[in-house]
Image (cartoon, rainbow, N blue to C red; front, side, top):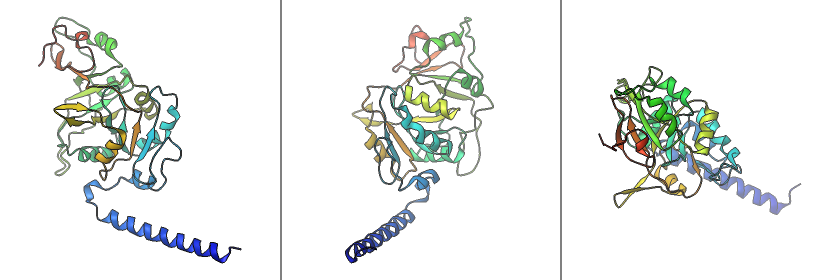
Amino acid sequence: MLSPTLHSDLVRTQFALHQSLLFRAAKGLSRKRLFTASPVQAAKRGKGDSGSGGGRSSGPLYITVEKDGSDIWRLDPVIKMLKEGAMGILPTDTYPALVCDIEARKAVERLYAAKDMEPTKQLSILVRNYADINTYTLGFPSTELGQDTFRLARRALPGPYTLILHASKAMPKQCVDFLTGKSKPRRTVGVRMPGDTLCQAVLQELERPLLSTSVHVEAEGELEIPEGAVMMDMFAGRGLDFVVDCGTRIAEGSTIIDLTEREPTLIRQGKGDPSIFVSDYAYA
């Protein structure tokens, strides 16, 4: 039997918890509808990180992992959340990426809304292997001079490259006007096969590509990688479900190569060596 003092303390604790829940409910109702928490985030709210290497008692799941993947098991909750339609931030071999399951339509809509992007903006996909590329694109064409672009790609991937290829019918119509419901066929797609242990681990377990867009902030005209806590704040209230933080990394954007024309064309020189595809470094 509880003593009078312990009973009094318990009553006060229960009352405080009740008031806290009422406050959270009222606060949630005041949010704009476009940026309300996702169903996945709502389900996780209040559960925290559960020992996954950091986190908060509510809001997005925050997981810290080692760069070398030695504690890759910490990513298990993230993989489960992505399968349930979550949207979150993963490290890659270039900039961190805001990602979601390519087949999760509601998550795709939230991803576009989170960065205030036009529905017609085409995003890249993160793939596991060449089988994914064969599924979601028409493959690697031969150049006008008979070059085998597949052979060139094998020299570059996995790595910090975005290869623009013709999209296949398997590619979901992500270029959608969410206000009118009118869709626009997507003829090309940027493909990334990251050479990053953590990102690849997630892709392998998900067993299909992720739709992605880079996460960065502008500083004096240049792009820099924000810290994990900063990224949490950047997308606060915008449906973010998780952040995977592997610490400070020196990174830059991917090198973008267009393989849909007669010859490989350099669109942007980044971290990857363009000479694998174009010897003269000519820009489009």
